[in-house]
Image 1 (tube, rainbow, N blue to C red):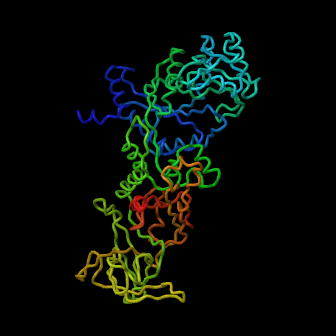
Image 2 (image 1 turned 45 degrees about the vertical axis):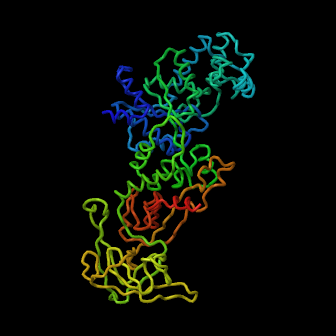
Image 3 (image 1 turned 120 degrees about the vertical axis):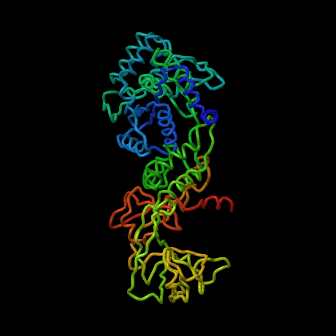
Length: 556
């Protein structure tokens, strides 16, 4: 038990203390409140795993609440993508809610603040308001509208709602403390005018609450017990508490944790939208994007992402996580779940000269040798002519080259031992065929030849091979911290995508299932692309078999 206590993160410690004290009657209700203005990314996954995971651990619930207070940037498409991502990660919400559900209540709350004399309508321009707030070292100064009467403010706020004023003509501000060292308490905006069609309420509203006002009050309306935010909201917490105290409503509490920062990645929705709009990537679900939909299309699994989020833990200080840890998590999962198949990406023909022409046989291979029972077996056609990887042959090999070379022997995976006898070249000196002999007694599983070889290579039968497109995805950025650059797009990795239009694979891969991982033996982990068709199968590389970037960093 003592070890369990030590392993608790600081939010779990708070929750357990609240449960012991009987706070909220021991109830735990969290929420995940995304703004539907883009697709979720891996940083949101951390928040999802935390909020839903805490609720599950303490027999509580989690609400999904869309913070839809900015009609200009929000779309139903984003709402649906967010719901799909959360379900795909393996979580179910207690209630699906929208801040727009509370627009009438929030308006009434704002009216109550006006009636208390702690909110006023300001006609100042955004520039004038910014100037009136002062600086971190100098107090702000009141605008000419700060001392309007309650009656005047109530009338003006009602007129704002009625739509008679243009965007930006007036705002509603809280009247707090223009000398506060916390800039967020220097008469923050509560409502602004925005004549725009809302994806749920249409044109019913032309005034919308600011996030700092809508956030805490929505938490309170839902009786959220633990409102968990990222660290940038620490200075917003006094305002969160001030609104709740002034309105005398359910006292939700805000707690902050360090957001996820990954190297070789950008997480800003604004920057991700730039990549999409400027065609640096195919879209929000491009497999190079850190979006959950992009990771899913690339072949990442829900288990790998949840494990990654749990491994990095919950901290109070910002730090940068190595992308290699996320890649480790997907390798770890796919090693246990991915079926093994053979694929040749850069082919050269190999002819077994002493194998009878026209003869074919069926060999057997396990689907996954890492699992007891192998998860069943597959049939692999074998014939006289095979495709092998061009890199698996060298005419003048260095020492300790354990693949194919003149006079050398290797084993063909699941098949026979072969020996290279000669090579055939075209007029440009390019090798077009490798001629080998095979040892009939060396068949895998039945080997009586007594011959030992150090190398094993993969292959695909020429007459049975199926042609597919393979996309080799890599990290989108070539520098560790692209955000720190003046132009983050200048650090885009030119080798983040290599397309191989004609790769050869086992015929069994024509029955590949979308969303399932496959290990192309010796080449990496791959999955069938969601835009793949029966006439043009496309496989995306999820991740290499080993961390190739670690070697590159060591070289540098």
